[in-house]
Length: 403
Image (cartoon, rainbow, N blue to C red; front, side):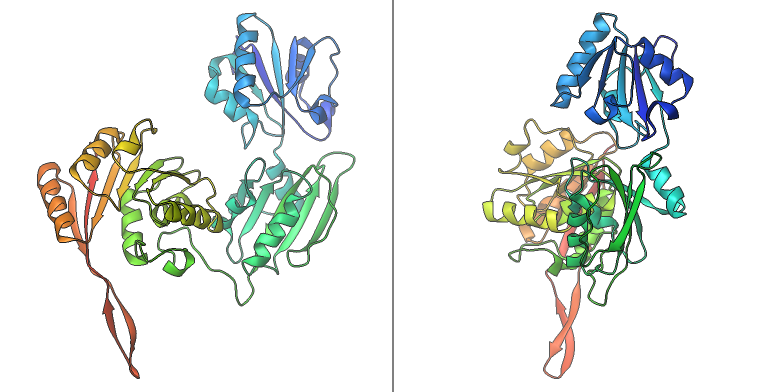
């Protein structure tokens, strides 16, 4: 907070002005321009101020705010609840000098919902489906998990109910908490299977995950079963994938380049492993690009980006990565481009199965250091009426932390 603030970002609850503290009321009364949605605009007074509905795209709003700052106008942006929790305040703070912004938070929808349900917020996954596909909740779905989801509109609960039912979580209890804190507060509950409740547009959805006997069991830890991916046989096998992703070290918001992405298994596991992790796959084959995108949606990371091309040519113009995986198209030029683009403390992992590629990794290890590992995996398979070990091709893996 700063005394020189020209922009006030104010969280508003369903009780409107009645729920605002005096500094927030004073900011609204003094504003020259007020931005907000139609719903939020209806809560406030100040007929003197110019009222502007949130423009689209978001860049247009930032440009308008910059212009108002130059004109020394006092500006208010209205948000719902806590403006820094899955809300417009966080995006504004990434684009505008925070020293000029004063935030006025209200209780968030997550806090209100947790209080209504008697849930410990520390033990709940908080998610949003506003402007995002509902599939992105899937990495958090597990037996006994509790989810609080900011919804886009009245259709979101039906979409989530269908998604849960398809994954074997039909017994899950869904609770719609609408207009919390306002005069029209309502609460509706039902099972995901057969969900048919009519709900208001403005609400928060609570999910108590309960699995049936055929539920799809997954973990955010890397190493999903190979059969969960659609592929043409060219896939980094489960055991090797688990080691590979662990050495890539997924972090919140970090970016992976997945070079020779194939069906996308490594990039998908990377994105599932850390909140808001991003991945760009580079893959020349159109059928494999299509499979990668299909797998990304099915496994809850619909933001996976897959581009056509081959490394290193396709890397020009991409944002610098925090990690690079080379699973196909390994050569000296690709490694050089990846190392040059990696951020400090970036991680590079390259896998090889042919003698020629293995020879290259041995030379790269001698030149750059890092760690050289050989992975040999065998799975038990029927041999007549008994069982025996069926080995996969061994994988030579070179990993490096950029200093």
